[in-house]
Image 1 (cartoon, rainbow, N blue to C red):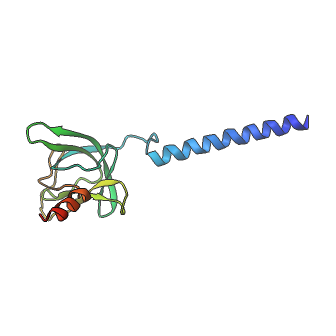
Image 2: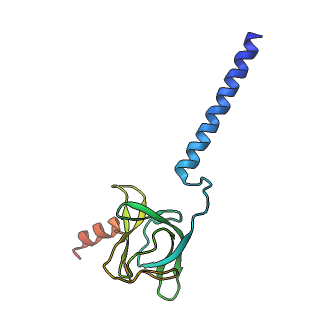
Image 3: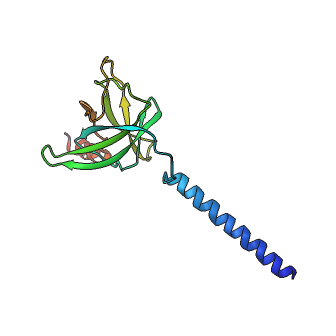
Length: 149
């Protein structure tokens, strides 16, 4: 009887451990179900999207204000077209702001940082960033340095 009780306790402990691991995995991956927050869509065109991925963060002054919904190739300009969902609470991004691809740390994930401009008009739903700065490609920089360009 004591052995049966021990087995049940160990089984419950294992189930709780697996549930905790699943919870942590979902939290880290960003797949947790959240209440849909109102948002609006902005677009940015980059010559090189680097390692950007859908669901990557979009930040302003270090604060996350949205996420990347989709990345596709614009077949007319041959640029990467990034669709950005911005939180509805951040509705006053100046129209002359720039979208810059940055990296978290030395080898971290890439994200879009919005460099705030000084225009009095704001970007509206469906607008495109006029100024963008593509990802820094370390391999290309080394190649250019080695070839003397």
